[in-house]
Length: 140
Image (cartoon, rainbow, N blue to C red; front, side, top):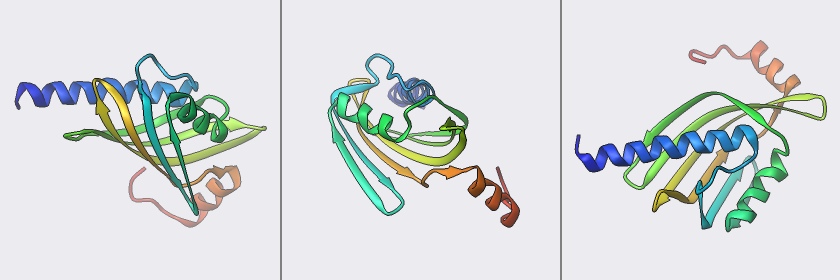
């Protein structure tokens, strides 16, 4: 593996870890995003976009106003950044929520400059229970 590949993978790992911290705390670590970051967020039956750090953060807090947990994740470094798959859980309005998300990030100068988000949609406790009763997953 070349030094450039190792450096790109290290940058991807550091940024992915910072991004998971952002998901879990709601606070973006320093230099996670470029000032002009572009976010393209696709959820079931809807699509949203934001440009700039503050607008990107507002997009996140509108959908997830509080902290969450990321019990599982998978990272794949790419030539332009990384792909991060996560399961996310959180509590809101006395309800437990769950979703799966895929993030494709382009990196410029060590920060995320473009982010595509694909979300399954938010499942409440009843949907998670229904899924558990009716579907047997082969892998967690």
